[in-house]
Amino acid sequence: MPQDDAFSHPIATVDAVIFTLEGSVLKVLLHRRPQAPFENAWALPGGFIHVDEDASAEAAVRRVLTQKAGAHGVHLEQLMTYSGRERDPRGWSISVAHLALVPRDRLAFAAGPDAQLFAVGTLPDLAFDHARIIADAVGRLRGKGSYSTLPASFLHDEFTLGEMQDAYEAVLGTRLDQSSFRRKVMALEILEDTGEKLRDGARRPASLYRLRDGVRTFDRTLGASGA
Amino acid sequence: MPQDDAFSHPIATVDAVIFTLEGSVLKVLLHRRPQAPFENAWALPGGFIHVDEDASAEAAVRRVLTQKAGAHGVHLEQLMTYSGRERDPRGWSISVAHLALVPRDRLAFAAGPDAQLFAVGTLPDLAFDHARIIADAVGRLRGKGSYSTLPASFLHDEFTLGEMQDAYEAVLGTRLDQSSFRRKVMALEILEDTGEKLRDGARRPASLYRLRDGVRTFDRTLGASGA
DNA sequence: AGAATAGTGTCTCTGAGACACTATGTT
DNA sequence: AACATAGTGTCTCAGAGACACTATTCT
Image 1 (spheres, each protein chain N blue to C red):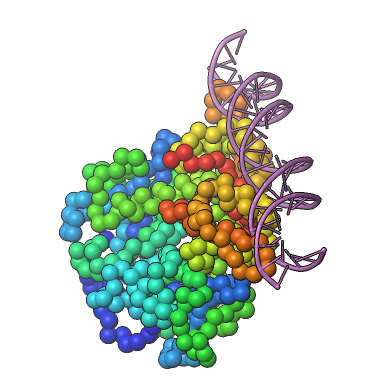
Image 2 (image 1 turned 180 degrees about the vertical axis):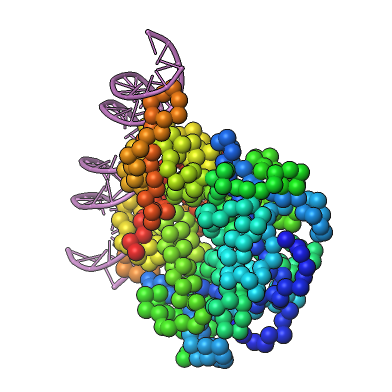
């Protein structure tokens, strides 16, 4: 315990695994590193914790999210912390990785050769231990997705049951039975009917719902992960 | 991202929430702090990460476990990382909290006014944000306990179904039906019959089982948390 | 009318819980 | 024989999955 402050401190960073849904495909935002180490390699958006500026690691991630993905007010949760002497050639480092879930159109980054969305199934080679971090993040998302409202974070505030089911299917990687899905969602009482309908073409309009706030996880499942 | 190394680094520490079962009561090991900050307050065992000595945060926790609890080779998992400017008066700090589950007789600490096991229901005032950390740890243990072999970490290598059920009941805070518990445990195929029997008194001897390794979590539950 | 998705009804199967019962050892 | 825990059998109920069906809108 508090011996003496003579120990040299590790490098402290944060990393963000920013997920989104693009055409019902689960994707992650990656940036190409502009400098060493791992110059030109793809990597997770991240950066040093600014002790003078960030109130916490989570605040540091929110800063990164805004600066590098143009996203704010999105679902953000801590994933895990990765640390050690070997993971960063610059020295003993500690990185607090977070999970961010963002609707596609709330992501604002300069898409191009240096920033891109990759489907989680086909990732390029990655800097540091970022492949491992993404694998853990996907595991968390798939696992927790089945008994939480996490997948709904990819949707707008108001959405139809069909859109909601699509999001769950994309996250869990399985097809779900429509009838069972609706029955279970309704039984959980996690939605609020807005009274409005979505009219978007040659078919029966669907009711628009909103997530009732406060609800995050439930004790039943909305479908098993087929990963 | 890697800008310049000119940022001052946070203080980096680890904390261990060491759980054990004493007389079917879930307890946590606390130490009294010998010095400021929070001198004389109860706190979780923990300490600075030694960059020159620890290969990772987990390694740092294992060192702390050995030094402060005499425990090694126990179940250890990362809980969460707590960080910020306010949590430690010495400055911006980051602490990687871990969960350790130890059978009572594998804990070797000098019990006395400066080190003690406390039932999780009746904790004293705590230093730093350690009350919050313990609350999170109890939440994790209770939650994950119902669908994992975590509670069995409190037992010896070989144990009876009765002992196993006791451990689950202590962790989940509920009584479980004996018949259902046995049926579910058997259906999960997580145990290996040693062929031996425990003879410990005036009653029918119970079979001794061992955990089959590799098994950590399952998709069904062994009982709901009654917290 | 036809296309397309929204939404309902219902059957079956499995697992969980409750609880009554039998078994087997020591004193 | 009494006792205490080990271990079994069985009934009932709720939720999940499968799937066939009906409803409503636009073109």
